[in-house]
Length: 480
Image 1 (tube, rainbow, N blue to C red):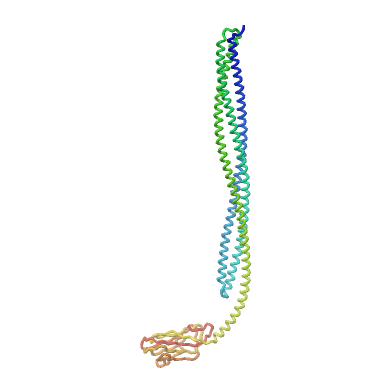
Image 2: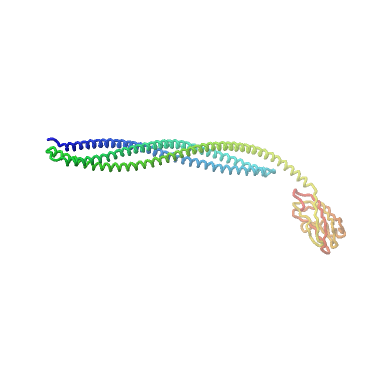
């Protein structure tokens, strides 16, 4: 028995729907394959990104180590330069001492005996200070060498730092490129999954139509015998499978939507990562530029320290020149000392001759006394060492009516009479220029006194001039 034409039409409709479903499922399979390939590309690029980030991490570790070395070497350089500063302070103090001692030497170069000894001592100090100056300059020279070595280490570490940062810079460029590839592949994946989503929507619509048409076919299949019963059973199974397919595709649709949302988040985070890495790239460029400046400045510092070294060498040369001149001065002082010793011997001889001359010479002492006529005893002279008195004269300069007498005596207890009470009277000294004289030989010793004793009727003032001629009995004999 044949199939009714209405059933044939229904089967044909089902066949058409199954063909459409098959086509849509094939398209879905293709789009899912494309999505898987694109996501595989994302996975590959992510692996490359992780590898590149590992390199960046390694290079940053190397950068941190190198910067630590730079920090250590700069500390060493600072310590060495601190030593230079300390030695320079000592140098300034030593030069100050040298200046003071040379000034003292110049000030002390004066007379003869004691000065020569002081000059020799002072020049010895100058010599010692010059030795200290040379030692200090040697320390400065050593410390400057240490500083140059330490800063050379800084320069080497800076070169290594710049090289390492260059590697970081290269790796960051590679990272940015890789992230760009990730961004592109994620975009491709989103587009492919969008196609899956569209095909899934069409599939759901087609399966819905299939469900409707199968329902219609089942309704139209009526009184066909075994085939129709079998067809009904088969179509029931188809109906059940189609329901399961619709449910599954609904789940697929939901999961694809979730995946699109998640990948959209990945896309957003990738954009932020690209922006952040761009900032890192900019900062690394700035760091490389800054370290280039540091490299230049360190080179300048090394050049300048080389100049300092030259100056210190020059100072050291001048210090040696000063030492040579001081040695020359020492020789001159030795010669001067010898000559002065010879001169001293001559002076001793001359002193003896002078003493002999002094001891044989006659000296004169005068004392003016303006006193009251009745003033009593007045000191005329005090003896130093020993003298021989040969003559004494008392002359009236101005007289007064109250004046009566003047007596001139000397020695212990006034035992020596130069002018007696009968000689120094008003009659002999009544007017200006009247005089009374004594001549003879009287020796008086150290601290003995010659005095004039006045007597009169009142305190009217008189003035007399006492003149004494004497010879020193010793080189220090004198009247005062």
